[in-house]
Image (cartoon, rainbow, N blue to C red; front, side, top):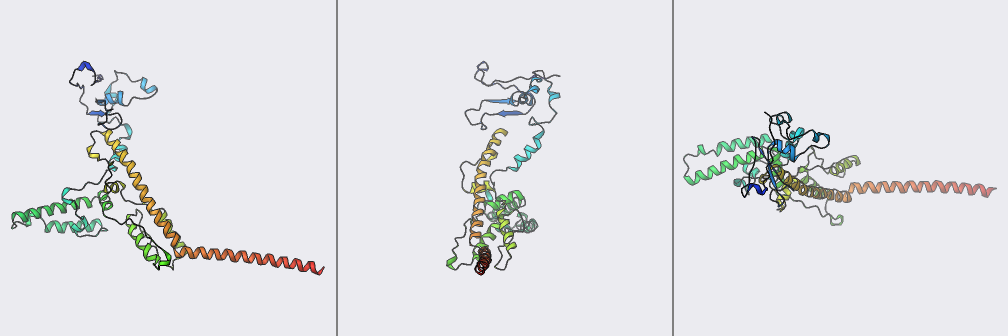
Length: 344
């Protein structure tokens, strides 16, 4: 059976005050102008893959001329396919990768999940799983049958907290988001050489503090005065190319960024993509600010590093010695010439 495409014009006065929508057995596809369905430019809601193929995403050039109203939709579309085409899986993967802001259950608001499970922030997944199982057995409601109603309620709430905490921390992506939301000292050292402060103690603490966000492992330590120039160069090269896993959207959420969008509130795929683009724009700003902060830390460290200063002074002394040697050789040659001229 050859299907026919029927377009529903919702704003046509012939339909009266009640909007009329013509649709087949396909899922409805909302269309908006400008990305957001709440904008004044939102003007229609289309129905069906054939409609979207014909009007939402018309073909260009010669292929468009071959498409007519009598096109057999069974031949034009594979059953179960989406009109996004061959890049469907790639686009869906990109959408899933952009999870938006961090979402924490109400029972966990204001609770440090690591303290709740009794593990450190650097705990491995095996350590987290072991701690969760021990706490779940201890706090299980079935083992608190003799408790009063109020005590049973507290036990139930704690058990739910433990379950929710484990569910979040056992997911690597969610854990990175949660770790990004924890309080962190972003300050940089205010180092002055003439104050008697130890360079390695002051900057070493700051570098070790920020090393937790490093994607690459292991993170080299700042070292000591006995390090070779090659070791010092390797350390600073690592931090010049520092890659952070810190989630910029979570940082924006902590700063109460008003322009940040919750993807779950999107009413259609187009609005969700528009929200993702807006969130990506905000994330880019916070990502750059994080890079600038690390670059400033490295710049200050290189400026005050006594090893780099000693190396610069040694190179300067070597250049001056070389210039003095050349000047002496030149003077000796000049004296020899003058001696030859005097004897003539």
